[in-house]
Length: 336
Image (tube, rainbow, N blue to C red; front, side, top):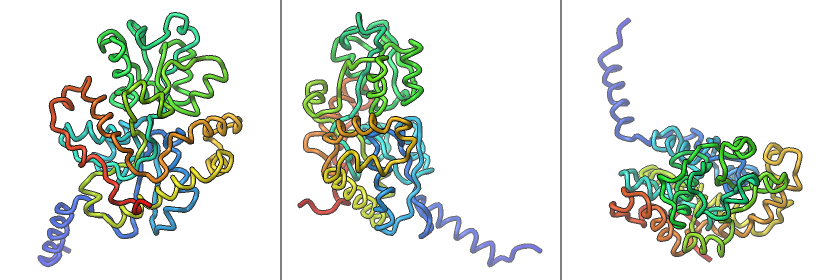
């Protein structure tokens, strides 16, 4: 039996409507958020918000997925495979230079929370980023924020990109293996990987970006990093969902600053800390000051990020970046 003319017209109309609204979702469809390494402490607010039930409190059905690095998550967002990403804010600026409009609607960390670790084997002759010449440096992924920051830190010490190699090694066990096998002499990673390397003695801290003073010294200002970002067009067409997501995350930021590291650790999956919960708690305790209290963008932060990216990214440097389009506090609860 052939379809009727009415059926064909209805089908054509539905197809046209879908094409006109690329961000259309069914009312009960889950909101998928891709996290650039779900077990990293810098991205902990995503898992914590889920564990605390704050998404459900807002009437949201949220699915969290993990990617090896922020750049992988970013690609999924641009492709429309996910509705939001938990990754570094600097991707919003980088993507605007490429004609993509992405905005952070909640900021989790006012500093990167990353550490450049040098292997204990290389440490005697690798005392600062000025010694990076001829070395292989590990990053989570090429085009990731660890890539951005590594290039900038080396360049600031007078070592051009051509004088060192970058190797994508992910985080956690893969990063540790790369250090132990001497595939990288140094690399950028975050907690709890940093604490694991320090405990085993496999690596030492070279550059610390976990605190405001250290970040300001290394980068010239606060560098808002871990955040929740979406496509601007999605936020515009889903203002209610965007507001609910931002409010849920804001509650989590308040929770972090009113509870102990031990209480927070009790809410995370066991595979986040394996058989060493005490080490995880210690790493988390040291990391708590880096989190924002309310999810808002720290003043002057976007300007620092733009300065860093402009230093070695010609496309960013030559573009007229409108920082006001790369983040917004509009979906968050009113400032108290």
